[in-house]
Image (cartoon, each protein chain N blue to C red):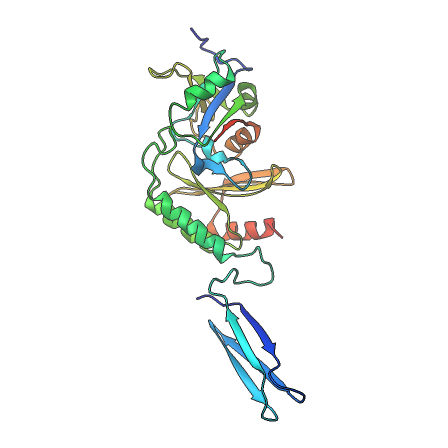
Length: 173
Length: 121
């Protein structure tokens, strides 16, 4: 369930001695104003709810973008439709199990990658800063194969789901 | 008649479909160079760049065409094999090694890094 970002503005409705104390409590998706009125006067309040949340973590706007996750899920959905020879070189269709595995992986990542199909029926997810700092993870039915370059030092080998999540988070730390 | 051995200075051409194009960084993804049967490329075989591009663009609706020098592929210890087929006498393949066909990890990534985009839709 998505948390919503609420924009709150107050406008003074009447004159001199208006004092309104406002407190808000938010639980899950709702945010309800609690208004204490003094001197029988009140301020008018407007709450603007954004229908499309952009992030569930507010400490870093680039972190865990729901918009990017949604976009990546759409890309994965489209990969289901790849036919044989989709790349002009006899490219293989992507197995449904690989798509599900990829979706599970990206749903648990703090930072969303770019997603590409390979000609051998696997899916590659990528993070690229520059040629000396990049991560490429090839997801097939049997394994997650990682190639990582950080400050020019490279590593390649199999990794498990949990280690990948930590590696990507530290890549952007 | 082309030499059986692809010359170190020959370029190898590869078409890239839009699904293998990294639009954020304006380059092909290394996934382009991951194939179970070896990575198909066209050796230049003494042709001009334009002739190579035109021939490749007859095969499919490519978003881009890139080229990489044979020498750069061999420096990574990958193998370039000349494998002509009926419909393409320039057809060649890049293999991981003499023992293994499929490349993964470093080799496809470095080939992508060395590749030059010569046609972009």
